[in-house]
Image 1: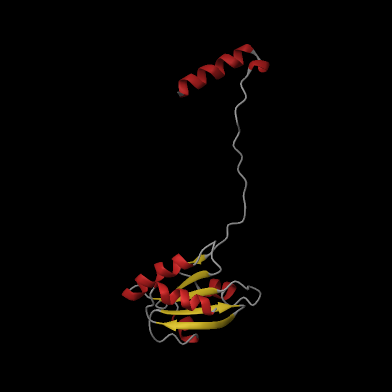
Image 2: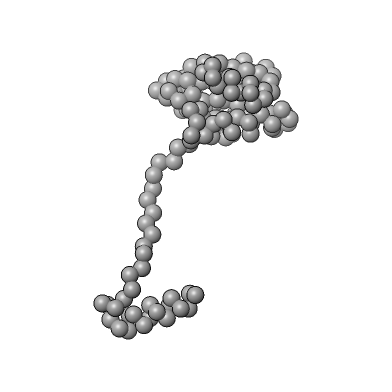
Length: 141
């Protein structure tokens, strides 16, 4: 197929510019990508997004640890309820990497999910929750 295209293009070039076939051109353009998951956030990312008083879109902050099995199950559930088509963003914070941040928001058990809106804590739950409980939690926000 490629050989056939190259031959036809070569023949068109020999015939002159008026006989050259018109090829469709692809155009690419950049647009803003809506970020909805801030995974393994650091202190700076946390401050910029969760504590931003100007941001009215709620964000769920999932405090977790690698060794926590319920955390490994909860995070994918939270991801399924957040996204570009959702009214919520998701941020994960590893408590082993950022213990001061976890202490600041009184994380004493894992997993802990804290909901922020306009830079303030709006709601919180501790421990694993199923799909129905997560929907109920989001409905309260």
